[in-house]
Length: 607
Image (tube, rainbow, N blue to C red; front, side, top):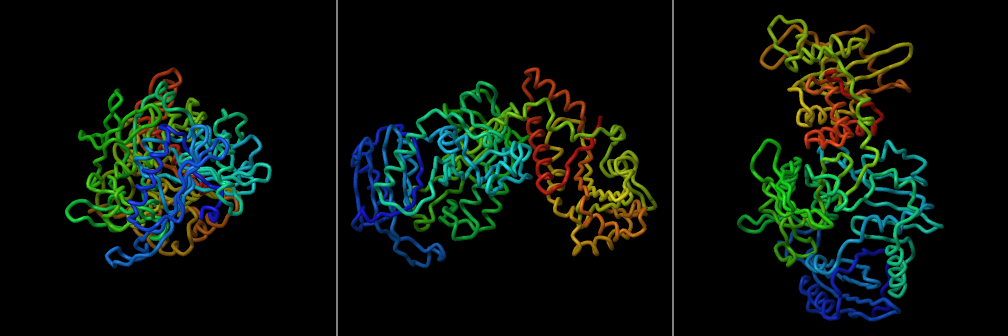
């Protein structure tokens, strides 16, 4: 029956860590059948048959599983077919499969991932034309665009270095000599667009691809070099030390929720009391608990991770030879949650594992280092070679404002008859100094808030729209004081288009006085209007073809000179604090998010 197998050329490639003997493969096939609870005869079964220097093994059988669109309590089952084909060659193996997956224990014992650089070298040739790419942001911040997908006939013509440095490639498609190839380096999955072929052609494809993977990478595409570059964990640890870790909640959500209910491949179950599947609300609450970045402490192989300014250990990692392992996780309810495959009934998955084990095996976490050029993403360390530049990618976006040196609060104090904001508040500094040249300036604080202040400036046809986000705090080099302001700024980037369907209510709300919490005032929300007709100014701010949009965080908690000094120390070889590394990434993420929507991000701070 194997002669009837006909599938596309796509497989996951691994290096062999421990030999796959006849007995090992036989035991694997028995375990697969046991996992799916089948007693039926195999459709086909072959163990380590040889073709040239390659050996291949295959199994296919029928099994029953609950339909994905019915609750398991319905008792309904549908009949499915699954197959697995292994091709061994030159200490590597190619895995072709549908509906069957290798047990995690088998992969851990016998297989190892192929180095990302070798997958890159096999696919991303110097003459490769990149046509599609999915990328992951290298930041642990929960306020960034975490993933994005680009597609074009030739991405090199439409994506510049400024749009790629903060991202690590996850999956890409290229054409080489007319052949369309796809690769997911983190999983070793490689495919070639073709019609369906038989098992003999699959074996030939596996042998050819493994030969390419065994060669040392040379002449890699210049385009892929504009992105963050993979380096070994050993090399990374010789240069730097891990400083922060965060769960890749977007990837976890994709696995357990999916784009819709039918695309999720796993379910989360609670083990407190009777086993039950987590509801969507419970999953969302868990994801929220898993969002924060943890600070890594210690200097040995095993290291603890804690929430900032809290003493209890929330996670533990192990720095192994080739990867970072997540050894424990207790954030929120994570310790009582387990992961099951949706291909079997609730509570019947023999490969059920803890959430911590699942995240570890799937490499669904990100680790930052105190070297700002390094980030551990998808089980691989990447180095952004353009980041270690003395601050050239950050300092131009920081604008000193002397009036912030005397600021003592964000909004100031309020009394009933007050008609202007205190000049010792961040609000007062924005009105009198930062936004002094805006023709229109309105206070949009509280209620349906897009920004603390919105300004419009017009000059000889030039139109500029500015969203000002105010912040006050102790002077420090830390991301903590920026998270809320960055979150507000990024959340409202879309509103910088001044959507017409929402502006009527907005303008009406601006025609009142500012009511501080528990204290009405006589401060007019329309601080300044030199154009006469705010509605017309808003329309020009929306429709002008060359309008400039600015998202500006105004804060007294940061000094540009302190940032310059920190970068100077880094260039001299001094290790930055983990708080500065997080600040760097958060600022880069903010600037990048603004660029994504055609806006300019900047920080107005103390000199």
